[in-house]
Image (cartoon, rainbow, N blue to C red; front, side, top):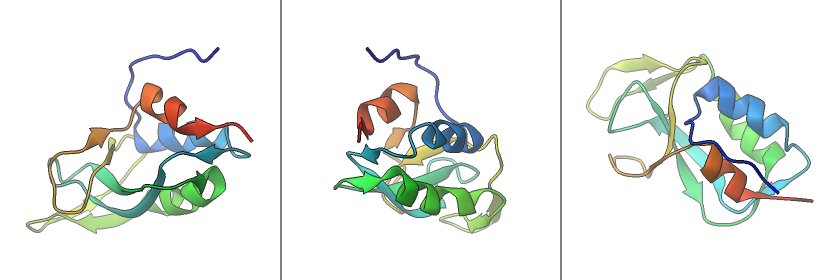
Length: 110
């Protein structure tokens, strides 16, 4: 049985946690990383509404660490280990912050 906590992931934690599931798939995948419109200093990914390997998700997520993204209305924001992460379409301030419970619900065992 999966155990959940209600913590939200920062970028470093998201990468570390996904690495534990590297041979698995996700029900919803990651694409198009960008500065989150709600908080420009945070990172968002557009969701892929189809199965994606964790390896492919990490190929999208890892390069964000240390990368600089432009905010929706300007400004440059460098993403670090402690940057909070969201699922959100580009240009929207809604979405879902990525946390332990959400991520574990997305994981499909091999």
